[in-house]
Length: 109
Image (cartoon, rainbow, N blue to C red):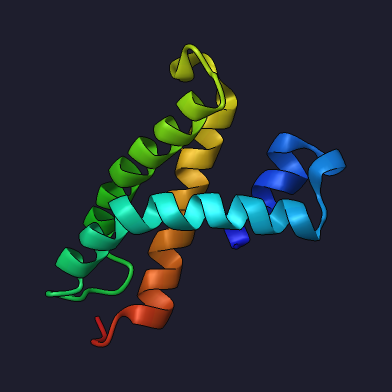
């Protein structure tokens, strides 16, 4: 939900920011991340380490895949020249990494 609110506010535009817009974007991000990022998260949580930089890099790669899928579904041709692609990839990896480290990791550093 955090990523969808950020996307609507800063990347898509305020004209789409509404309860329905947040709900739709949240569902899109949720289902695609559920398919791609959840297996990564389950694997990494077998050896939990809070705020591990390697985990951030792994989440970044997963995030790049998810962002590419979403961008291609919206008709972006060349993702690598789009600053939106990089911003979304970096922020979604950071959000996922921080929320995972704070809320889901069971062991401490």
